[in-house]
Image (tube, rainbow over all chains, first blue to last red; front, side, top):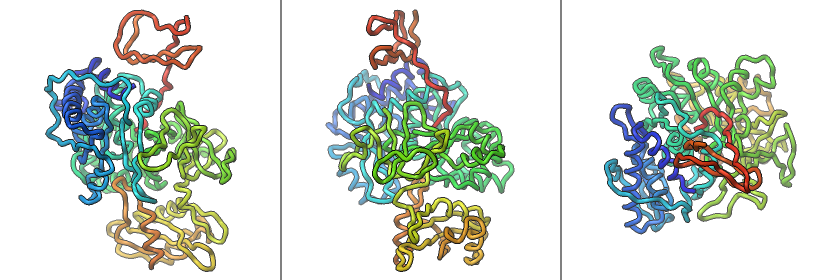
Amino acid sequence: MNIATLLEMAADAFGDRVAIGSRDDGLSFEGLRRAARAIADRVVDSGALHLALIEPNAPIVPASLFGAAWAGVSYAPLNYKLPDAALQELLARLEPAVVGGTNWVDPKSASDRTFPEAPQHPAVVLFTSGTSAAPKAALLQHDQLLAYVFNTVEFGSAGADEASLMAAPPFHIAGVAALLTATYSGRRLVPVPGVRFSAEEWIEIAQRESITHAFLVPTMLGRIVEIMTADPDARVPSLRNLVYGGARMPAPVLERALELFPETDFVNAYGLTETSSTVALLGPDDHRLAMYSDDPVWTARLSSVGQPIPGIEVRIVDEAGVDVGIDVPGEIQIRGDQVSGEYADTEAKVDAEGWLHTGDRGWLDVDGYLFCEGRADDTIIRGGENIGPAEIEDTLLTHDAVSSACVVGVPDEEWGERIVAAVTLRPGVDEIDVEHLRDWVRDRIGSLKTPEEIEVRDELPQTATGKILRRQVKSELTDN
Amino acid sequence: MANLMGKRYTCGVCEATVLVTKPGDGEMSCHGQPMEVAQAKPLPSSD
């Protein structure tokens, strides 16, 4: 099948509904289909096998995704914040490619082009964020993306009043998945314009457009929470569903957000580019039980990523590849129809039995709730003890003065590795006694997990979606 | 029997799945028997 089917069905069934933009003057599903056909005409004429796009969220984004599908070629959204040289390098890897432009959106096109039912090329090529290495070109096939859509969404299930605010950038898997599920469910998309995320702007648009659904990465939610805490008028009562994911959510930010959005259903979505988006989720009821239950099993689940979605199997294996059962940490492996694990340029990360080796470290509890500790490579080995940086970072973040934290292992003659933290301070906090901060951590999680050194920074290097570039922090701290 | 758009049908014998992309009349059958409607588990929005 072809993902273009999703738009074809939406345009046939509710073509007058707004697909993207404001309720009054947005682009309808019928307009989006016409725009997609017109883009397909251009792409086919060019002879390209990739339609690259270097634009922030706007109507050209869904029009290009579906336009490429209509042409039977791959859609490759690129990070518009990259320097020119890096973009040229990625474009060279996509040859023969054509780059789309915002003036390509033609909602009145009379093109009657049909799409191939069995496309020969991947639907989407996404360059992974590369927090630990150079970006890899992940390939997502039509059937993999469709498996995610069909397993999680009913056709036309969105109410006419629903609207989703698109803050995830188009080159992130969450940005791609949102286009597909919004189209299939019939939910209006509202792009957050501009290249840089602004929490003020997000709140302002959410209020103006009566936004009901949103996806945020933790850093974005953190900034929104800061503004809402300072300004009692900064509220979004229309918001029914808030999905967060893309990186680890600091517990203090989540707890504050749950208080500030009392009527909103929270969903923690865990997924990788290579799994066509979400494979496990912690749903609204899980959040409420975790917040209000006295049972430590439930309370702990607030830091889990929930249970696998339909069609997905999750297992935890040790270094020998043996399933370790419950409550034991190891590598997270994932299997299902939506799982790709294929790349344009390197070996696939899927084994002969279809298991994707994620490189993420985690464990499953007795009811199958998945806890993700982060990248296996990030584990600090100090004096033979395996220490996950996440718990230490979370503890640093519970301190009022700390705004972001990154904990890494730095080579040490005596211990193998020693624990070093880099932190940034909240606006208005000029300095902090590092010894006091170390005491703060020691009192809460013990001396074994207390950073030997803490460095205060003005900022920490991040990807476009707010993942801290751990590898860069580590090399800077190692060189010091 | 009307086939509503967006309904999915599965065969009880083989792995065939059918998605209705254009509504119409008639009955879906595979391996000589009517196909069953596949229900997606209701999930909160996940992206």
